[in-house]
Image 1 (cartoon, rainbow, N blue to C red):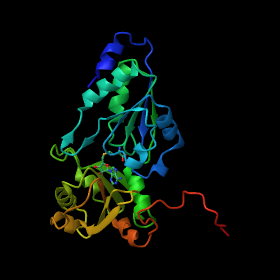
Image 2: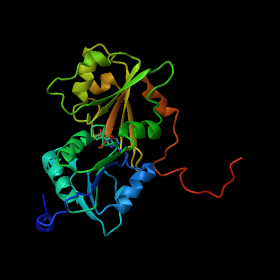
Image 3: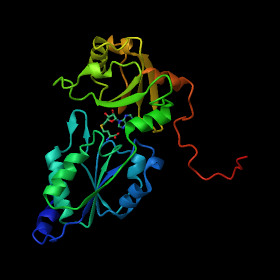
Image 4: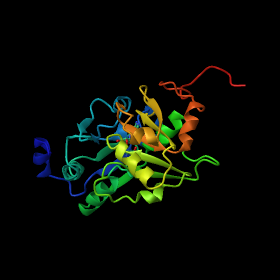
Length: 272
Ligand code: SAH
């Protein structure tokens, strides 16, 4: 993955590597970036970004900044994790400030921990800038409070990606009062729903897919666990989260987002 100029420059590499910032880009709406994340984007010499980072956020990067897509999308790997780790180290020794820009939050299904450990082993300084994870973005923009009096007392973030190893104990998620947010679960949604029902979660439990959360093309698909288990739900756009729990029924009442940015721009209107 190292470019020719890196190989040449590495021969004269700085003894002290640059700083690597692992930056969370949030779910898509550029206004959901933190101030610190925006500063990192404006000051970086080189940005390695994931496929999930939205166009609106990429548009905030100065045109002259070196930008490298290293991201993964289901079924299409641009670079392996160890190639990404290696590239981060190579860039750190040839640039002052390298940003590793990730969708959502770097420490929630973002492999940020692995990158920190790899940088540490190579003696590279790093910092982590948290981002709004897809669960929080989807919850807010789809009107689904993840906890709600009398409906949900806890929430779990689950990956639907590695179901085959059966590492998950679905019994843990049977409580009607626990909201489940399943990342990377669209492809295996039917199996997930079947396992939840088999573990004792009611088949009548309400659920919703939230696709493209916080983006102009956001969509919310309400259904039940039974519908998903029966394979009745298909053609969900990606990226999408599956939220399971009766809190998803509030989405029809708590509606404010109409697929465009609202409320964050300056207005001349007086608020009384
Ligand atoms: N670190 C990220 C998650 C990366 S895993 C975070 O904190 O959000 C990738 C999964 O996140 C996708 O498969 C999808 O399930 C979810 N996801 C990411 N962005 C999303 C979005 N804008 N809308 C819905 N789901 C999203």
